[in-house]
Amino acid sequence: MSMTQASSQYFQQVAGQWDQMRRGYFGEAVRETAITKAYLRPEMAVADIGTGTGFVAAGLAPLVQKVHVVDGSAAMLDVAKKNLSDFDNIEYHEADGAHLPFADASLDAVFTNMYLHHTSDPLAAIQEMVRVLRPGGRLVITDMDEHPYAWLKEEMADVWQGFARAQIYAWFQEAGLVNVIVTCTGQSCCAESENANLGDDEQREARISVFAAVGTRRTVMREVVQERYAAAAQSEGCNCSTISGSSASCCVEMPGEDTCCGGSSGGSDCCGAEKKRDTVTFSSGYTPSELSAAPKEAAEISLGCGNPLALAGLMPGEVVLDIGSGGGLDAFLAAARVGSAGRVIGVDMTPEMLERARAAAERNHLTQVEFREGYAEELPAADAEVDVVISNCVINLTEDKGRVFQEAFRVLKPGGRLEVSDMVTSGAMPAEMRENGADWAACVSGALPEQEYLDLIAQAGFRNITTRRSTSMGAVGGVSVYSVIVSAQKPGSSNAKNRSGCCG
Image (tube, rainbow, N blue to C red; front, side, top):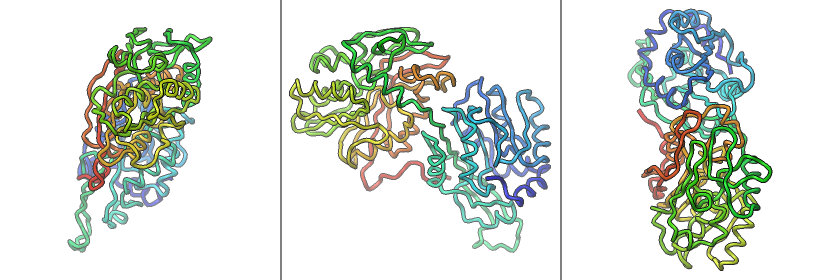
C-alpha cells in the first residue's frame, strides 16, 4: 500500500522542481472538484495523503479546522512547509501510507491526489485511509484514468497505468464505503516523454483524463430505524412529540421516550395536518380528498415529507413499487390510479409495518396491492418487473443511498420512471448529528446534500433527472434541510449506459 522505492526516490529527486512540473500535469480544477465532493465544514479535521508540496492542502486549509499533511518524502514535506507557511492549522507527518499516523475513526475526510498510481497495493491503501475515517466521513481520490503510456513507469516511477473506473468503484465498495461516486474532474493530466527516440506510434505525448472518486464510511443505523418504526406501527393513532437535540420531524411518539422517528412509509404529514417543532416543518401536501380515498388506518400512520404521486403520471395497468411502504398510504393511493389491471408492490423492512399494511389491504379488499418484506438496498423484486418506483421520505433513512438507486434502476423496465420525495440538505451535517440515531430516524441527519443525492441517481444510470422543492423545510445545525420531489427515467435498453464513463 506504500509507495515503491523507485517512486520514493523519484519524488525525493524532483521535490525542488515539483511545483513547476505539477502545473504542466494538472491544474486547480482537479483540486476544486475534490473539495466540492467532500462537503466540508469549518470544524472538520482532514488529511491529505501523499501531499507532495501541498497542492491539495492549500485548498483545504482555509475551509477546515485542522489539516494533516502526510508524505513519505522529507524533501517534499520541506517544500510543502514553505508553500503552506501562511496557515497555522496544518500538521506535518513524514510517514508511510501503509501505516497512517492517526487513530481509527479520527478524521472527517481524507484526500489523496495522484498518489494511488504510485502504490504497490491500491486496495490496501484505500482500506488504510478508510480506517481513519469517522462514520459518515468521506474519502476523496483524484487520479488518472486507465491509459496506454507505459513510458510513465520508467520516467516518473508510476506503478499503475491509471485505473479503470469500475475497478476503483469495486475497491471502494470492498473497503466498506457507501454512496460511491466515480466521475470526471473535467481535466486531463498532460505529460511528454523525454525520450526523443519514441515514435508517434509509441505515444510520446500523454493526455490522460482525471477522475474523482468519493465514498462515505458507513454509519450503521438500520437497527435503530427499524426499532423506531416497529414502535410507530404498534402505536394507536398518531401524535407528535419533541425530538431530542435540535432536529425535528413529523413523527409518531416512541413509547416511554421523548424522541420520535421520521417515517418509513409514504404518505401525508403527521395526523394529516402540518406540524412544526424546533426548526423543521414536515408536510406532505396531500389533499383532503386524496387522504379520504385511502384506508383510514393507513393515513393514521403516514409520515411522508411530500407527495411523490403528484406528477408521477400513473396510468391504468402499470406496476408500481413503493420503497418503504410503511402503513401503505402511498401504495393504496397508487392502486387507485393503476386500477384493477395494475399492480402495486409495497416493500418495507419492518414486520410490524407490514402486518398493519396487509391488514388494511385485506379489510378494504385491495387485492391488487401486495406487501413484501425486504430492504431498500436489496429489493425483493425481479429485474425489469415494474413501471414506476416511488418512495416518500425513506431513502434518507438508508445507509447506502447509492445502492438503493441502483436497485430501483434494476427493477424498473426500460423506460421506467423513478418518483421520490425525500429530505436533502444544503451541506454536510455536523458529525455528532450524523452519528445520532434519534436524529437519523427523524429523517434529518441521514439526509445528503442535494447535489450528492442527484449525483447518486445519475451514477445509477438514470436520465432526464428533474427536481423541485416540496413542502417540508427548515434548518438544523446551521444547515438547510428540505424536501424535494425527484423524477428520473431509466433509458431504453439500447442506450442504458452508465453516466460514469470516460471524459476528456
